[in-house]
Length: 117
Image 1 (cartoon, one colour):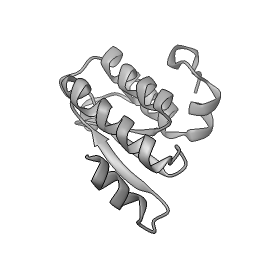
Image 2 (cartoon, helix red, strand yellow):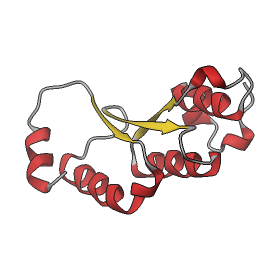
Image 3 (cartoon, one colour):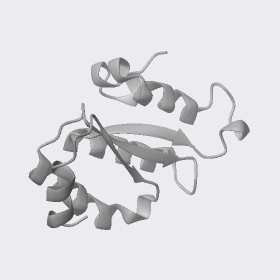
Image 4 (cartoon, one colour):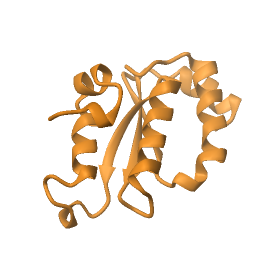
């Protein structure tokens, strides 16, 4: 993402746009790009979602860090679980997905530890 690309994206006629943040270790590279995009477009969480790949080379704390960071920046995270079939229905990563992807719950209950499905 560059300022020029963000400006071009701003000209699109689209109801929504999606990005992805798959690797936690890309944090220092990706956050400045998200900040640039936000500053130039001014688009809020209603229009911009970010796919967050979880359960792949990350801890739940790292996943939550990405989720909270995106929400604080004004983006809507959307949790996608890697190898979901290998997780149980009450696995913490599944509960986290349920919490984040249910927008009402996510914007009402600010902390995952307080979420009660």
